[in-house]
Image (cartoon, rainbow, N blue to C red; front, side, top):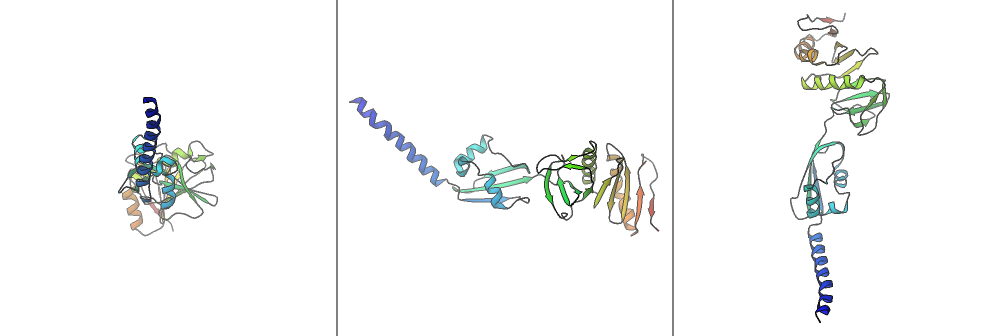
Length: 239
């Protein structure tokens, strides 16, 4: 008799568990997704990225997965925050990786972050983002590190563009010649920076130099190729 009762109890318990799970799944099913901080992709694309797996489609299981560290951010995202404004709503706040600069190669503009990872490629230049001109790019794949023919070129570009960003230098484009000597162009002013492993020393004094040169309204060149601390700097106007 006891065995008979147990025989009926077990399916009933299973049925209750399944019913509770189904109710919770239905109540907490994610029906609305909002996205904040996205610039690379539209909201619906981001929403799909964060709901690729079955368990990410419910608030409760999504919350558990995120708390356990199972939420995977796409390569262009530095960090994300997932919140749940209501039973069936997911809000995604993105902190995207910032584009540092770009490279104009052939008919492409390849934009990378501070580590050289390719974040975006376009056929037209993005407004207000400076770029390098180079024919030494050998490979560029989205979300992979840019590859150049000269091993030292990418470290040079990263060092220079990071320093220019840090010191808030307004520049339009730059290039490295075959010997690795750098030049940057800002409006009508060209600045020769020479070949260096670290451009901090020369870039740190550029704000005042560039302002003085631009205030003249003239086209010209500042040659800092052989600059050392204490050297005199002359803005040579073009005739």
